Length: 480
Image (cartoon, rainbow, N blue to C red; front, top):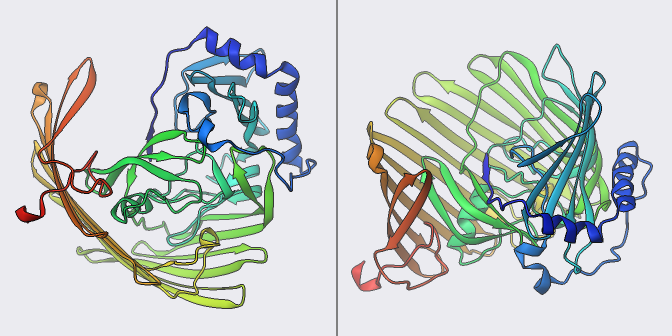
């Protein structure tokens, strides 16, 4: 997953304003709190003593942001001592984050926190604190502190505090942003949630407090791009796959992840809020070089327990086929899930198809509190290399909820690269949800030192709720 940010210039006045509200004592206290959380000495906050002013905090220039491992932070301040560093990221007025780490032969100790000059939010909030050790003779890693759970092919990605051991590999379609705040249980949504939320005429991303801002666009084969927005109004550009590719495991059971602890609540809103006990495990075994078996289970105390198995196999030269079944039990109800998929790739085209069915009573950890769950979802992508300079991409997504609400999205993008003259692309989309809407857009980009893109709509806006390609516009119904 690639996450793009807009960086502002470092402003001395910004730092002065922020650090007037954040004393050195608070800074040291926050770092100490992170260390205490690691060893289990800190007492989680059971009740929030802070009320968030949503209207005031929607100003993105006055909120805090979290550092991410996938970002190159613009400012790095070396500290005395080998293997000790403090990284600072200044984005806008009052919007800064810090990451402190200590690395030596016994592992890496890392703690990140956000600081804000906005008086409507806490001046400093701890984001993540963890100690980790990667063993030299394998890819296995032990992590104590804050972590993101493995999700397998069908499960939930949850932030929690506790212990994690194995070879964790986040699913490619999950939005694993450390920057965005999440009220309630800190569950991470997927790229499919973003695409289908636009089609429903809604901005909700599935995760409580997350939404899409503006458009969700198809930018390539099996790749979507959109702006994710959190509960405080912070935004972040996200570009990642619509479907996570199936990868066969090497012979043996060398890919696994196990974790347990307490689920994280109000992430990036409160420093030390943890809830019910949580546990999960994922094990992938290569039976042979052509067959992989995966088992995944997840548990949330007093809510749900789910377990399932997934098979993936290479079918000659045709492609990869996969199938999964799972069941859940909790809160007096039980349910089932079934999923099948197919993928094929060669030098001319790539195709992927995945469909998922589940009963109304099936609940994974991320689906707690949802009264109208998705009972059917189909995702498909096609990428065709027309020639060295032309590519065609097609994406389709559809889902149906338990009460019968349906959303269908079809998007097509053709890109033509013209060397030094830039690139030209056309995007068309059609949605059968909240009425029928279609769109056609043309985009041209040419780098002038830095790439600058511009776009022009071919038709006027009919229904702004259908917002698939950059800022999609509906075609008049008479033209259909």
